[in-house]
Length: 236
Figure 1 (tube, rainbow, N blue to C red):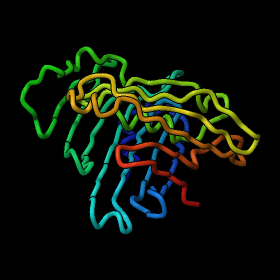
Figure 2 (figure 1 turned 30 degrees about the vertical axis):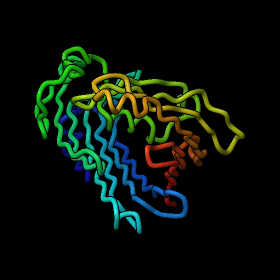
Figure 3 (figure 1 turned 120 degrees about the vertical axis):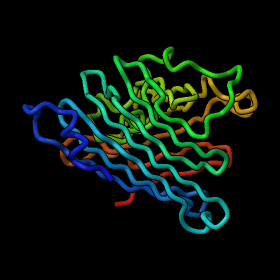
Figure 4 (figure 1 turned 45 degrees about the vertical axis):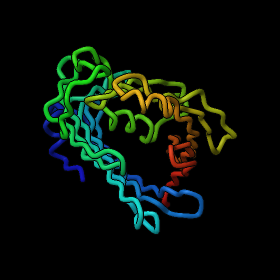
């Protein structure tokens, strides 16, 4: 899914050795396996490339097909990822979209968006979204293994080419082996009024498990969706 050339285009010749991260998850709605998730990232001290893919699976795929293919590349600084380019190909079952965004000095520029809807009163200007992350870069923060001190207690603004949202994780509670963080995805602006009236905040709980090297990895997410509560479980 990711090729090393993505990193090679970004990092200087003196960059340190790269690290590859791969994680596979299963999405369950009650007893049903409804989707499979693949997360993959390649990073160095100065750059990253990340991708995620969600596909329908099991019995649920027979009556609702979904497809998420997201990828992002950018720089890494002391505060987190700084995106350079983002691409998505998404079918949520309610919305189909293709988006490409490039960034200059932290300001997103929409290079491609399909379908391209007519202007609406709730539209956002990309030029006003400086400092936001693309959706994949935000998920990269959530899913990459890291020390306990940097696990939770953070919030990022996200812009996907049309809509602005916030992804938040509250401080962690840990028993030594597992750490649990309450969080939320919140719609902020750029959504049609009916979407904002339907629901604005989607709470979730993220669980991380300690690894042998001292880092913690995401092993479970429980979240409330428009269709009910789902669980996202790491496959080991």
